[in-house]
Amino acid sequence: MANSTRKNTMYNMAYRLFSVLLPLATAPYLARTVGTDGVGLYSHAWSVSYIFCLIGMLGLNDYGVRAIARVRDNRDQLDRTFSGIWQMQLMVAGATLIGWLGYVFLAAGEEKEIAFHLTMMSVSCLVSFDWCLMGLDLFRPIALRNTFVKSAAAVCVFLFVKEKGDLWIYAFVWSLATLIGNLSCLPSLRGRVKYQRVPLKESLIHLKPCAVLFISVMAVNIYRTMDKVMVSRMAGYVQNGLYENAEKIIYCLSGFISAIGTVMMPKISHMQKNGETEAIRRHIDRSMDGVLCMVSGMAFGVAAVARPFAILFYGADFAASGELMIPLAFTLIMIGFANVIRTQWVLPQGRDEIFVKSVCTGAVVNLIVNTLLIPRMQAMGAVAGTLMAEGTVPLVQWIILRKELPYGRFLGYVLKYAIIGGIMLAAVRVAARILPWGGWLGLGVQVAVGITVFGGLSFAVWKMKRER
Image: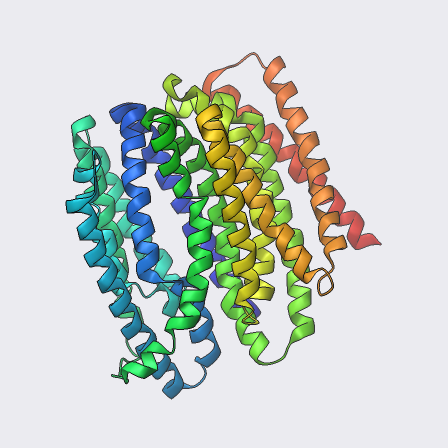
């Protein structure tokens, strides 16, 4: 089991690393090709499309993984559970696809052409089986096949997107890649699970628990996707382009957090069914320590180099993205903290209402702050809303779970790595002032200084802890 978890974590982390590097490879090219308003226009169309995809999947990325993990040792139950969930998925995703086409042809504005070429994202929801593969602990096919498909898509972007008028090609390529990526995982299910027609009533059993999780999924995306829609409407596409490229870096890095949670949730769900409560607590403690170390290093590291990085990476027109990145980076710590609690304690126990309460509260906070601050502060108002929202989620979790989990020890981990991160940030800033080099060489040296300081101090702390 431990070896399987390590392998799955390695596959998922490698895939997340690739997923981080790929958009970072295409983002500066797109920024220079279509400009801030082009990036903002695409971001707006994609955000709306993504919301429809979330509706089509209806919380399955959490519910489906848990449901499959609980019955994977019983082939008959596994086949019936898979079949019932997929039939429900076809009904919901099919209805959502019709709704998306209605939006494209009847409601879309300036983004209509881009939105039309994103249609295959909604089609892909009909054949998305990641929830089943992850529930079966099959992370390898997801990682390998999607890596190949996305690599081909990136090559197409560089070959065919040459000017602002080619923005529709960019949308079409990534939309098609999403569909092909989902279809490419189908062979991995052969022999492991079999579809059998089940009564409609049996499919609809899954609708209510999925809908409960969907509430929280949509709430999360109010402050991760709707931010961009609100910035576009209240401050314009240029401000949204700046916010999009700042948020892109943070979103990519948060993929590492999701990778750990994605691997651990089916494992912990299986352990929960077998009553291994104490082992789960040990897993949570080790995960919290490791995740907070990782996210603190990323948060303080990004804050240290955000200004020069934004100019070098995106171009001078996106210099303001660096200013937005600095506060946004610290959401990584909040996201990491909340993710461990959610994927290793709340969801494996089926206590979905805690997840719903925490993220819905965060969404309300975000919506209020965005409405008040975006008209005054433009994109920085959305940053403030995101910080408040991400901080609210672990706070609500603490209010509900403070008597069940050792939050005092967890906060000690936060303080420990924040101190180390602060020392690293100061060291990087000092290095930036005294280095004789600028450009990418100077930035590379700053990053090396940061990794050395943070890694060295963290290793020293771990060694001292073992010797006690």
